[in-house]
Length: 185
Image 1 (cartoon, rainbow, N blue to C red):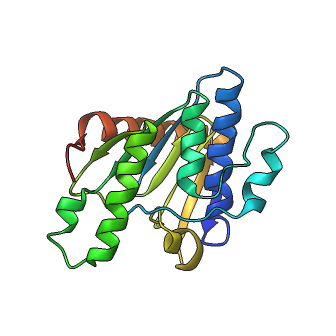
Image 2 (tube, rainbow, N blue to C red; image 1 turned 120 degrees about the vertical axis):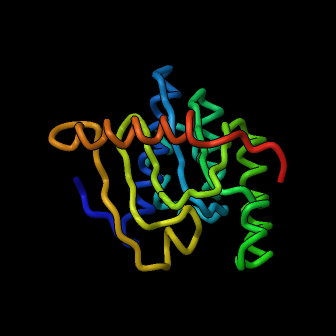
C-alpha cells in the first residue's frame, strides 16, 4: 500500500492508464474502472506520459480523456461510474460544472467507454489490472492538482494484492449491479 495525496495522485493515475495502454498494445487484456461522482477533463502534464513515448504513441495525449481514448484505441476496456448531470441539476452545484460533467461523460461514451451512473455515488477510485487507487479525489482538475486530498494505492502484487482484489470486486459489482446505463443527459 502506498499513501496517496494531491502530490502523487496524478502520477499514479496516469501511470496506471499508461500501463494498461502498453498491455493492450501488446495484445494483453487491459481494463480500467474509473469511478468518481464528479468528472471533468483536464490537461495531463507531458512529463507524466512522455516516459512511455518509445513504447506507445502518446503524442496526441494532451487531456485525460485522450489517455482514456488511447487505451480504448489499443483494445482496452474502460468502465466509468459517475453521477448523472440530470441528478446534479437538482443540487446546488454550478450549472457550469454540470455542463462540464455532461460534456466529459458524452465524450467518454463517444470514445467507447461503458458509462453508468449512480445517484448516490460518493466513492472515488481507479482500478486497472496493475493496481487500485482510491481516496477523496474526484476525477477533476481540482481533485488531481489543487485540493488537499488523501487516499491509498494498492498494487496488484505482494502484500497489497488482497486489498487490490477487494477493490476490483467492489468496482465490478458497483458497475454491473449497482449502477444503471447513462441514457440521456
